[in-house]
Amino acid sequence: MSYIEEIVDLVKKRNPGEYEFHQAVEEVLTSLEPLLDRHPEYWEEKILERIVEPERVVIFRIPWMDDRGEYQINRGFRVQFNSALGPYKGGLRFHPTVNLGIMKFLAFEQVFKNSLTTLNMGGGKGGSDFDPKGKSDNEVMRFCQSFMTELYRHIGPDTDVPAGDIGVGAREIGYLFGQYKRIANEFTGVLTGKSVGWGGSLIRPEATGYGAVYFAEEMLKTRGDSIKGKTCVVSGSGNVAQFTTQKLIHMGAKPVTLSDSNGFIHDPDGINEEKLAFVMELKNIKRGRIREYAEKYGVPYYEGERPWSIACDAAFPSATQNEIDRDDADTLVRNGCILVSEGANMPTTLEGVDVFLNAGILYGPAKAANAGGVATSGLEMSQNAMRLSWSADDVDRRLREIMTAIHRACASAAEEYGHPGNYVMGANIAGFKKVAEAMLDQGLV
Ligand code: NDP
Image 1: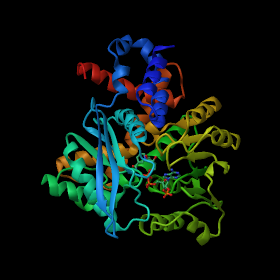
Image 2 (image 1 turned 90 degrees about the vertical axis):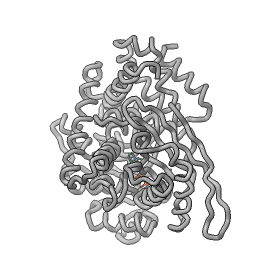
Image 3 (image 1 turned 120 degrees about the vertical axis):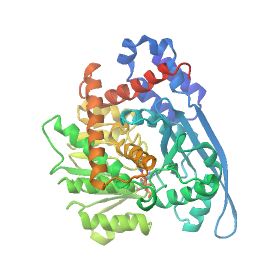
Image 4 (image 1 turned 180 degrees about the vertical axis):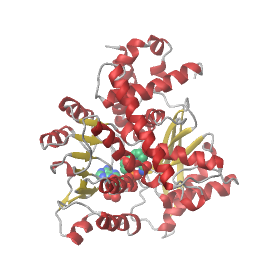
């Protein structure tokens, strides 16, 4: 058994049942072999053993009262995984599937993603098994207040700065910030994704989706190609999917699908600005289902299915983890897909990733392709610290520069370590190296 296999095995034994965490660790560590060959100090000083263990995990009770006056109890989490590069930074997810394994996979990925952004941020993630679907605004507010009543003592602008993720958008960030401010008696940049009127950054809502398209464009450039005119399949219909679709439209591509956890719509004519505005209202305000798009525009709706069977040039998974398995990946490649840029976190299984790598298509893994969101959160933190607000053009320009820099870092690491064009290896090596060097510098941490 190789050293890396031993560590993966150890992680599985020490963290039973945390399957998504095992998957994320395996994906990162197995691509580090060429790096470890050149840096024996990493294994001599047990960097791998240290880096797979979170610095701190907080699990807590969230009691709240629903509109009928009944007591409800949920479970809250904050995983503070690694602070070698800066304060912990990463989103909060409210979804019934949330458990410790999912929190740890997301926090682990976040460490290397944040390292790639070129900004100084450590990695963390949190959330709850609370399901905001079907809850009134008042119930969501009471839940957020109870969640923050415990979380506030573990976070701070120089300690840990949470943001949104699945189920946590502008409404939830507002309620969470309001409660933090009451308890801490401080108006600070303790959360990102705030509304623009009170400390949020322009372009933060757009950043993850826009960034995933910028990353796709950078990958295409290496083959003398561009996203213009490409038919694109997008999954999800939340924040990341909406702004991926918007940027695809702006750049002259044709997005043809959107989905939610019930099914997907296929619009062969392409989703345009007007149809996207309908989706934004449907999802962000009415909180309806994507099926209603099919009813309004008379296009097919596929109940209980994912969109990967639709022929496309490029795919933008933007819903959730493990939404593309080996068969889906095979289907995409067989139907002519030449690019995958991951807006969602770990949307492709390990077997699916192998299919993309073996086919030699342009495959941008999440920690690189969707890093635009957290990078812009980093820009929000800078603006808060300076008590300034930058213009939309300014933030968008910085976002684009950061995505270009991430692409460059991944491409050159892949090349340097003998696997040109392999963005999985490039992203893992470039992200890991910076964290490992900081940990060595900081002694036994
Ligand atoms: P939203 O809550 O805004 O949207 C999530 C979308 O994915 C919804 O359409 C939802 O459908 C769908 N979805 C969620 N869970 C499942 C599931 N189990 N099966 C099928 N569909 C599902 O979240 P975001 O857009 O913010 O996040 C989407 C992905 O992007 C996540 O993987 C997240 O971690 C990642 N990400 C987000 C960032 C951000 O800035 N927001 C930054 C980097 C990554 P339904 O409405 O039916 O639940």
